[in-house]
Image 1 (cartoon, rainbow, N blue to C red):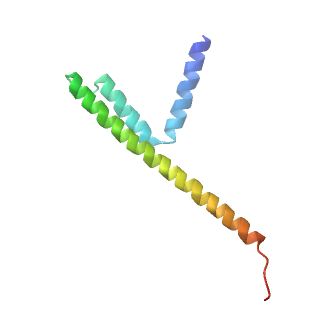
Image 2: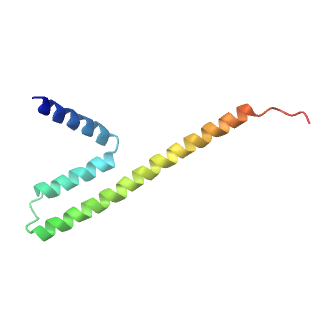
Image 3: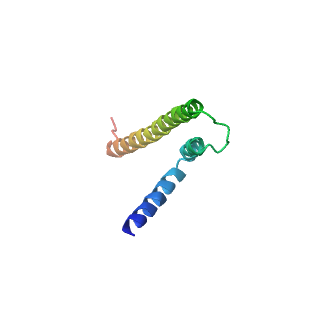
Length: 95
């Protein structure tokens, strides 16, 4: 029973985290579609492998894009905070 609760909690946390990144959630759903052969058009292991590799490649690109955007936002916030702190610390000189 405890294991089931733990799995349910993990699933809820994962869903909440993926909700913050809709493009990643969509890509994970695409990967699951490959696993489930949802379209019913993948008849060979080679075709499934090709589709899986393509989805994982796209996932990697999206992960790096999201990472870069978040990193940029943090750097801008840090810069703005430092700039505001420096402004407050400067004294006006009358010359």
